[in-house]
Image (tube, rainbow, N blue to C red; front, side, top):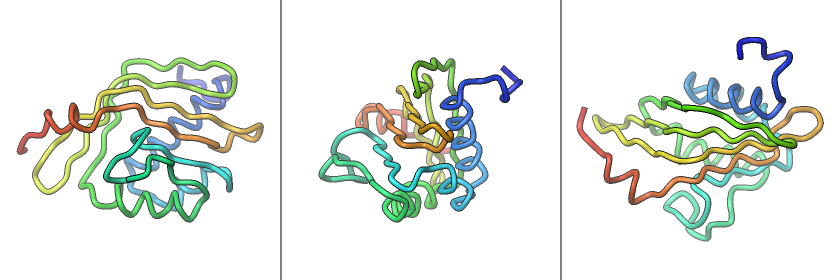
Length: 139
């Protein structure tokens, strides 16, 4: 899976998104999204999205970055596998976040849907807040 030119566009977009988050590069991350893209992380109501409707459009996605990603010390993507179908790819495994001397692992399924140009239309993260919080530990 090292030849990205022959890989599925949604898998390529997902990996690029993960790389931008690891690098803490907001502009690079936002550039991966279609102007009408959306982020649901996690899917449903949460502290990041009390109504559970997602973050729609680049301004809202940028605000999500500021609220959820920018405040972390680091984020690692520890994925076991990925599955590409249609114009989507699903990654399975966990995301490890470090913040203020704490570490939290969110295990789940993380999906990326792209348009015909490879821009992300939807990033959806299926993980349970309470389950992730139960992994919190000081580092």
